[in-house]
Image 1: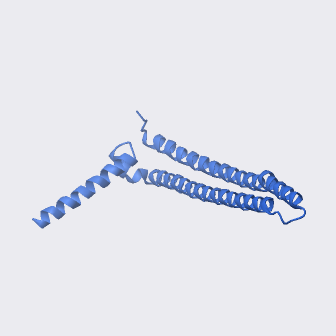
Image 2: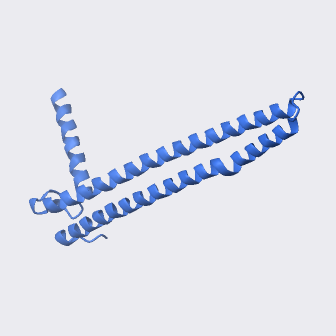
Image 3: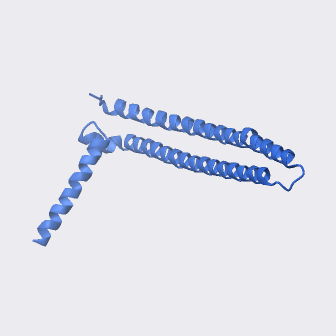
Length: 163
């Protein structure tokens, strides 16, 4: 009984592999398994692999950029809170002779931090992210063009036309 179950399991695995191969390389049995089309299958598989790699790299870089943006925003919020606390501390301090002058300077520092420093950093980060995405998009377009060319070569060599 165990032998029959093992044989059925192996048979099912082979059937799944054959079905996947026929689905991956349309055009019939000869296109999916024939030696005459081995080079075209290899080119198509390489193109698909390249597209997957580029898409994986793009997703990884995008998540890294999003983490960096979240960290920059958290640092911005921390600095703003710190400066607001400092402004409040200076405003409440009655012992200082030049209390209003210091509070005004603290308010100006807070306004400066809000208007200049962080937006410039954010703009730089946004620019770097945009440039990285443009490079990734160019690489992805090239990989897709390579895959399309391999697919067209496959169609020409097999005579298979999509329905």
